[in-house]
Image (tube, one colour):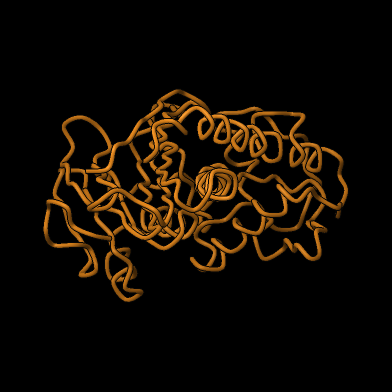
Length: 299
């Protein structure tokens, strides 16, 4: 049985958990994780007025050359938008800031709302309508997970197995313990739980309507916006969990599924995405690609 060691801490208002297959490497792996997360935060945080993306929004410029870190994050965000036909849109920053702040600056008055298709990233140059407000929160977490896994493999070697979880997103190295990384799929205590095994660098992401809720008038709403209405979604799902070869892809699918509501199950099934749904009455539904064995099922 493979020995493992785990570090846990809080960052970005969520739980971070890092497990490695070589206990002696835990401190160095943790340092790499903290370093990657700091780089991601400095590049794209909507909550930091000094982040690279916030500075671009407030500048009123239409284009700028971006750092390699921001280029990777924006590339992942635009890929997620294309994968989901725009359901996961990184240009909703101004709308989200009205829910939980801070304001991103006064956007230039436009004849229509900005959409992801208005944004281009070519050869490290970002072009967008002046004042575009970005939110890379969900995809940023997923991208950070992938970057941590790559940093550990690159720095500590391909035999250093690691599983990193930030919030509901988990990414893993190709190297894994015997039987795979045993992962419990459960959002909150009392929700239906299930155990699966991640192998060969697989990733998993859970999108939830039960966290980061905000009061708008007399109504309690969640933080996921439907880009078609620019309003918080009223989803039939408490959570949607998806598995994929990358954490960014898994996160894109799980977020889009929350937005699609009842249409999500056939939408993901048609794409052969392993997915697990928990509705507001705690009933579990899955796509055919989700593993059928509850113990040590492989995704």
